[in-house]
Image (cartoon, rainbow, N blue to C red; front, side, top):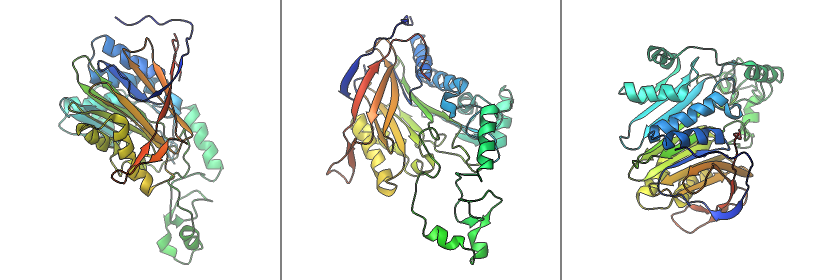
Length: 379
């Protein structure tokens, strides 16, 4: 039976280390989107599977258009269009379904599940993913709304700044396109510009420009699932697919170990498959927080200014989180240890500590737990 939600908030501040899960049913997700956490948790309380819970939670975020970064009406690309990426993974069967650059269909996580349930494929992309969705009974609709359109118009009027072009003509830091490769005109003054440009792994990125929802659930049968949903980077180059629908990058789940999910600069994070690496660490007996630290370490070594965060939970319900590049970061948990969704805050700025172990970094994750008993969601 679902718990009754109280009308007045009770706030409890507790200093703790990440990882006090019950070992029974649990939901954990990136970012302070408690409405999504609650939707997934209620699915588990009503005897839904872990896959059901993750799809329910991510679908809620899509419907709520969480922070403008999930679902329709957010993150327009260079042409003003919103496209969606999503993935769902079943840790019992190791089946996966994913969609990338999905156009004109709102329910990205549900389409990803249809890929998993009704095909032998893992990932479908673009217009043909849309065609598949329509065959499966989904509706076609315009994903562009007033908010995303206004954002795109402002961007165009500001000479398309910021953008993700490099080594092209005209200079993308000053002009909109169309562009051509710099090598076509070696005498152009952009040659020295690009050669002398400081390395930056976060061009045009801030905390609101890559906040994918990544979610993990363990059900009463002891099965784990992980999934993601996002509308990707704002002003991305059309056709771009991020880390969210890439198995082992955006998320990964395995009943023998647990699951992990990531958020942040996906173009960088997908190069390291951090979610897979974290789960592999847990498979060998490493605790979730340490597993995440080891998975994040090589990314930081190559891209020290990148921004990202990760969550993980093992099959005993112990969970952890790490973050880098933000001042602080928040994730949500629902389990049997508290009567409502728990918000965990991590101080990223002071969370890194070097350890002399396999060339990894260890993050002393100081987590503060705030338990809110609310009748309304925090989005």
